[in-house]
Length: 291
Image (cartoon, rainbow, N blue to C red; front, side, top):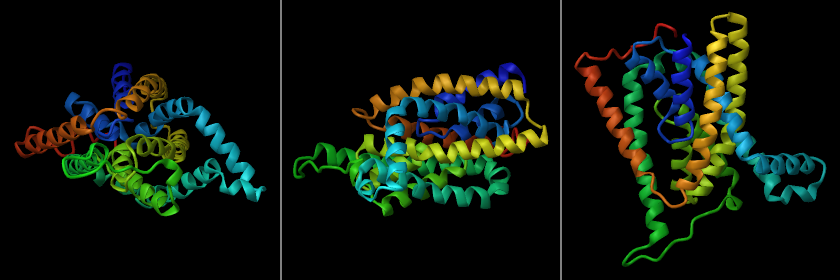
């Protein structure tokens, strides 16, 4: 991998990780359209450490408060009713599905799941689901001629059942094209949570999964010696800087704006990929040589 490739892929990772459009799909598509080798699942996981570091810094006050309350709840029964302590447990519970499936489906994630036809399909299907979830949220928030405004749930109302559902939604993002934030935010909106609550828990829930995945791939990459460390580290730094700017913008955006622009983008991109593959202009396995 060249330094120019790492620059572009780092920018793509930082720009797309927190938006509901799938960073893994965009990394793969960028390589395919540019005629580069597939950066691979290891590169994706390692650069996600950069964007997840941006989450740690952006939500640092929340994270310190949650971690502190969770540790105190281990020895103090009264603390177990504290919202922050409960959030710590819910993040752990919500991380179970992706942990189990990530290990079980590792070979598929790095192989068959990277077929561009699968990526295109998931872009379209998850785009439609996000659109439906967004419309339902908008209907509750604005009411209508014959409908009163319906109050949506906050994170203080998050239950174990909802945490597990969030976790299953996050696990779907193991397939390129789904989008971690897109799947979990859609799940949250469909369960009746506010846009801000759905996004906030989505980002908090991603921390253990992404860091664990990145460190796991980091260990494998160190042992195999198949990673270009200089460009990969450079891409990770770029992803961190850009990702921090994007997450700050996105958290403000969702308080007043609809997700529909992302829905239209996902569907149009998915259709474009299907057309190009059907016409033979793009191989469904383009840029897979790096594995």
